[in-house]
Every structure is written in C-alpha cells, then in structure tokens.
Image (cartoon, rainbow over all chains, first blue to last red; front, side, top):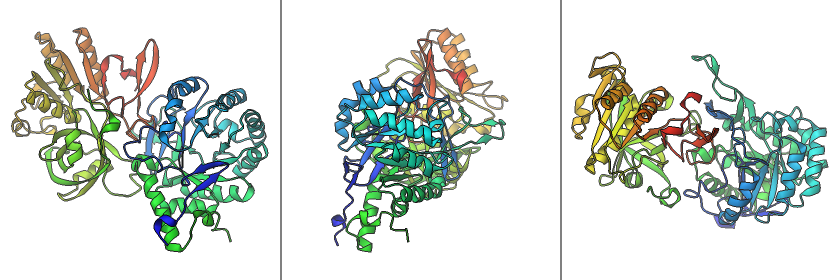
Length: 307
Length: 273
C-alpha cells in the first residue's frame, strides 16, 4: 500500500476534517502566529483561544513554569472579547483553510448562552467548544465543569441557541469525568474534548512563595498523558458521541494511544511550543503506521485497544 | 522597519556548533552555523533553542542573539550558566547539534536610528546590546556601551571586546574592575556629565531597568529596554510571557516574545513583576 493511500479524513460531528489533528485551544492563538511553520492542510481543524463576552486582561505574571515533563500555565483567559473577534479576526479566518472552532468561556450560564447565540450566525466558524474546564479563572471554567446537573443545564441552554456542532471540553479535575460527560451528552453535545489541564502548583523554595502569579495553574505536556488516555478510555465507552482526545501528545505514537483508546480525533497543544511543525510530522507518522500495519483508514483503529 | 514576522522564509534549523569558548566565570560564547538566522537576525531578536530531544527539560529556552554574521553564516550566543539547559549548552563540543527557531521577536530600532546612543548592560544583559553595539559601530553611529557586573572575573576580559573594536565603560559592585558601582550608576554619571544621547538602550535585571528608565525620564530621553520572561511558544500564541504595561490608567499585558522583547521602557510596570 502506498503511504498516501492511507486515509486520515474524518467526519467529526458533521465537520469534515482532512485529518484527525486539531490545534488545541489556548496554545495556538487565532491560528496565524504559526503560519511560518505550518501549511494550510496540516491541521484537520483549529480551535481558537478561549473567547469571552468582554475583553479579559488575564492573570498577573509569572504565568508559566516548567515541571518534570510538563508545564503549568495560568494565563487566565486573556482575550480581546467576542466583539473584537467578530470585527478583526473573523474576516481573516478563511485564510487558515481548515475548519475553525471557537472555544467559549463565561462567568455565568447566561454569558455562555449569549456567546453561543452570537456565534450561531457566524458562517466562518464551524462549531464551538464550550469550556467548562479552565482551572485558571475564579468564575466559570472548572467551577461549572464538576457538577453534572449544572453541566446538563448549561449545555441545554447553549444547545437551544446553537445549531452547529457543539463540543464540550471536560476537566480531569471533575470528580467523575464520566458522569459529567454523560450529562453533556444528554443535554445535546455533539462531541466531547478531553482532557483540559490538571490543576497544580509549584513553590519556589528560595523565595518561599508559589511561583505562579495566580498561585495555581494547569498542568499540560507528557506528564498528564496517562491520565488523559485513561479518561478517553472511560468516557468513550460511556457515550455514543465522538471523543476528541488530548493531553501531552508529542508524536504519532502518542496520538495513536488516544485513538486506540477510543478517540475519533486528537488535539495538540503543548507540543506546538517545542515543535511548530508537529502536526505535519504526526500526520506523516499516522500514515506510516497505517501503511506498516495494513490499515487503509485510521478509522479502523478507533477504540481498537478495547478487547 | 523590521521585516514582517510571517514573511521570513525559514523554519526550524538544526544548527552545528562551530566554536564554544568560556569567556568569563560561568559565561560561554557559542558560534552556530545558522545561515537563515544569520541572514535575518536584527539586534534585540532571539532564538528559541533546544538541545537534545528529552521531555525533561521539555520546553525550548530563549537566548538573545549576540552577533550575526551573514557572510560567515554564523550567529553567536552569549550564555551564563544558570540551570539545566545552560549547563547542557556549556558542556557541548564543536560539532554538536542545537535546534533553533528564529530569529524571533521585535528588536531594537536600528539601523534607522541616526542619533547617538548610550547602551546600558547589566551582567549577561550584555548579550543583545553587544550585537547592537557592533551594528551601530558598523554604521558609524555614535555609540557608548556601559557594562556592570558583580566582580571583575564575572565579566569577559578586555580582549573579548577589543578584538571587535568595542570599548565599554565598566563598573563592578566590588570595584575590582573599572568604577565601583552598577551599570545604572555609570549611566547616571554620564548623564550628570552632560551627555545627552538621542536614545538609551538597556538590558539587565528588572531593578536596573526600572532605574535606567527613571534616569532617562528625568533627562527627557527615550529608553528602550529588552525584557526577559519565561517563554513557551515564543511566537505570540500562548500569552504565557505577558509583561504588564500601564496605558490610560489600566494595566495591559503585552507579549515579551512577539511585541518585544524590546519595548519602550516608559510604560513598563517593573514594580508589578
């Protein structure tokens, strides 16, 4: 079999992707900063930075610290707000030449509903990812994401006003991620993204103070991969909607772990910081794996680790 | 004007280390074969560097470009050993491979600037200002480099500078070399003697930068500072390197990696970091 006969195309909750690789929200800005290293088509889709109703200044520095095989971030959803997005970012989105999804975050249920209602009429945006899992904001974020009843109410409200694909991004810090996943599914979610970062902290022993300005941050990178693979394994067995797996994917084998655990697509965040061409390399690696093992489509691998 | 970030046609470079020298206590100068970076580098820009492929340390580290020679296809880095990555770099031998992204970031306003300049370097803050000094001297622009260090052997010796035709005014905290004091003290001394450059450029610890900006402000002189921050993406996407600036009575975070690392010092909120 020829390397390029191996197909990576995927239909994710109604969105056609050229490949199952998605740029993870928060790690990729609005998709334009990496154009020196990435060609259109390297990504299946791009999820842009978490967007709120009003502009957010973000958290005080330091916002980053490296940890063993990972990093903590506490950006605090710094973004220029939905009005700026509509006026200045939206017209440029077609240049990215792949489906674009917007990650939305609110401090109240009503803010999520308003954001979804606004984006429902934005043709340049293929879907939304509802962020109920940011560990770095005081209101909203993960404080919504741990309670299945609240998640069901929130996603129900968003579903009423949003007709295009609706993805819900889940936190590993939710007490029981499967219960939250089932709640989002019942409320009408079309797909689930998991996992967001895991809340953590680092203390500077010389200064005897927390390193991060926000005190705590979200852990990402290879350090969280086993937690993420386990979450995908459990959630994909419990729901009948597609799961997008993410958490420390650095190379094709890592992406394959998620796919074999049951993910229909995978998102890549931290790895972009180390290798801006990582999407292209993982696509090539997936094709090579399919070729080497006699599969014609990666779809055959989804959940294949399950006995 | 610096070239548009997105128009520079280069990707990720596997560079060969050509030469590595210890130039002061814990300081090393590295020369890398890096044609594209050498062709486009401007003073104040940096490369985002990775040595090895392990997941710990995971992230790249930013280093100011210390000099670029487009004819020799070389860039130079000047590093002070402070942690895991700098220790690993100091232990490399010629022929070693270093992976870089860059040049990245917005550097000093040069060579359009036709006025005179005072350059204030605190310790390893010398790295980007040395490149600026060489570029300005090559353009015959009046340039004076002020350099501060803790002690004499914490700074490169005279031959390091003289072979490039650079003659810095030096101060050390213990007075073991040059004047007793800091780089900011040297600036104060020069300003008190009536020197009025068109611009002041500075790189060093935050406390030094705050004082340099204040000294410049008192004389009505614009100060440009090169800031340091921990970076993840280094291309402007992740917002992790944000530094606070004051505008119209509110705080706004700007990206050290992309909007900087060189900024006008006037609005920088050094007291908040």
